[in-house]
Length: 348
Image (cartoon, rainbow, N blue to C red; front, side, top):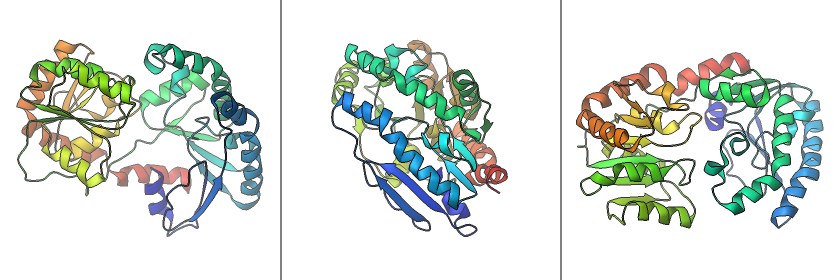
């Protein structure tokens, strides 16, 4: 979203971008890029101690500069604490783009921390839950990405938020005249939260006929589980690195895009797929419920393997017709133009 916001306002306002990170970010043209390089202490415990005691000082120092220089600031998630410490120290008008809560502390640990090691790590990281909560409570206006996210933010932080749905570039993600191939697509990080194991288990009976393409990165162990779940089928392909152009090509070729994630806050792949004229089948939970018109641009189903498989086959049968409706849905309701127009009232 930030790139689109900058492109909209860079000719109207002088925009300064601040990034606090241990990795040098890509520069964005048209703004003044300010990179604050930090060096977290090495080691799990040491790194968390750095987050608890050193990082807030860095944010406090930056806040002093911001409070003296600017009238308004748009704040996004922080890599280390989800909501940034900066929110505590700001005295100027601020808008926090909160796309999701610190989910591992509010959702079942068997999903976010399936191994004993991960559970122990989350116990040691529990202070971050409080840090994230205090930071969010200190924000001015909170903007979220869906009704579902609005509900979880209210539940976790007892804060009201305003919905500005993300959009998609319908001029880039658009259909092509090329013929559909026997491809089922899934886009997102490879991990238990995205739940590709459920997807592979559901689609196993048809993997001899259809190719399942999973776009995303993940731990080696989880990727091996995915392949094993599919009985080492040669029709499961994992694509780790991909350009937007290559991703668009896959959306166009696929007969259906699948979402199996656990309570996805929004689900951008739903918009991108529909914009390319490909229907979407998603589990009936989280943000995708708000972007898919059930039975018209895709299907929403319960997390049942048999039902999911039957629904994917139904979507494949109706792929062309539903794809046309999906494209109309995006052009009518889900473009970046509409998103940024709604954001205007908060950034004026």
